[in-house]
Length: 300
Image (tube, rainbow, N blue to C red; front, side):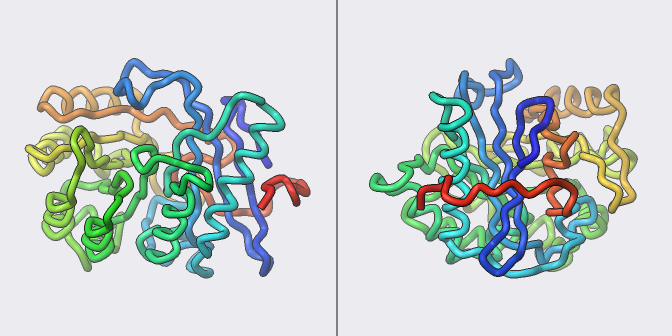
């Protein structure tokens, strides 16, 4: 377990067959740039992994450099949550994990059956009793998986890693776009059934000189116009395995302001845990710290 100066904890967990995955516990503070529902005092979000490594090759993501190891079982996904709950109960009595995001290592919709099973277990009133409204599954854009998830009787929130406004750029930074391009992806998202007051979240990682121009801001607003959604702008979190740069603060502010001026809800996500490589896109399970024996804490 590593601790960031901002209170984030990164857990590097060893599986029964000697592989490593990571999960992140993120204590959050209310933000004036958030919805009331998203900025409640005491909120703790846990970022869950669904695979060992990842089969996709998103160019900006450290996890992609690992390649694909295997899918996690529903039990291995659920145990990440019980372990985090036990750690918080011991170290910060009174605090608990309130929100779950399947945004850690792996593509959740590539492990569809086990991810859905873990959602069902975590939502069960005899288990952790998590509300689906406080659970988000993120995808890089697997159109068949989005369509399948939309047919489930009870559905989590959906987040989509967009990261580009043209097929040419998205082909470069997210090769999955060559199979399911922006037209196919946005068509599947438009058809995804949403409950009242629910929105799709689009994650947009800002890469300097790649996808952060004023033209990109205008295209982004046009692509998502009329869709119940919000955009999370994420300044790229540097790691030595990718050739990109984080935009300057002024360029980030300019991009956000332009998107908002065009009527699209856009929220800037401040990197959390980047000093311990725990921020978005940095999870690579490198053997760069001491392993602490946590056996038995999860209580499962």
